[in-house]
Image (cartoon, rainbow, N blue to C red; front, side, top):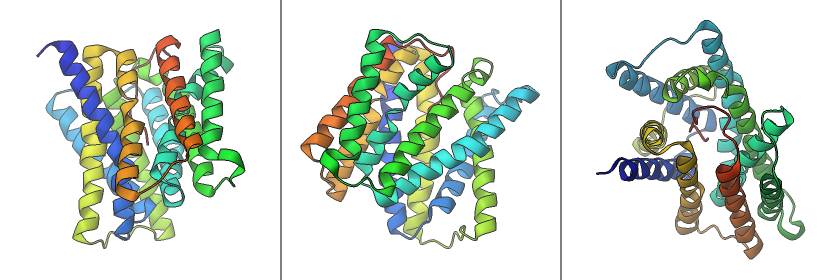
Length: 298
């Protein structure tokens, strides 16, 4: 198989795997699993498995002290609330809306890079921001419908993920993405573990079905998704990988409509299209932040 074809297939598998994540989370919630305990097990299991894979391939290295500290802070203080916001939003809003609102983050990353003086905003990128903003409004609050808690949390998750990418961009110039993901997942699992211990929200006395969905999220939607992405990106590059990754929210939307009967209004469909178009424009015309992409999208 040609290198390009293999890379495309791997990134496609990654995007679809990530797209299943909110679906599996809803199934886990239906079995009585809480947000904190789901995320604790997700990141802890993924941390162990990713560590084993990196060690087996002789790629598990200890970053420099400042980089390691940065990764721990990112996982414990930024990725921890970002994941909490996203997974909690799924309790209050349809999967399709949450997935689409999260995917406004590429445009906000570009805007943040401009504010920091890292990137110039061209007319195309300014247009992409306006398109994304219109799309966000249409998806979140079509024709004056009251904005719910799920929408606020989903948007907050996108903003926190923007901060996470911008703050981690310099570290990822020096640390490989899969190695960085390993330490971020470990730090996030510690945060969820401590929070759960203090609040008593981690019980783990689940049914077999509940364990199945949580373990599936760890294996398929975290380890498999991240591993195939990093291998695929090494074959086709970050720009093409980012475009293919647009399949992720599409997967989430289609599955949520098919499995949960969630319906979107015409204006929400239009808003979702605007968000995807703005992300594609940003991917094609935005200047990379000199970093290796970090696909821990939720």
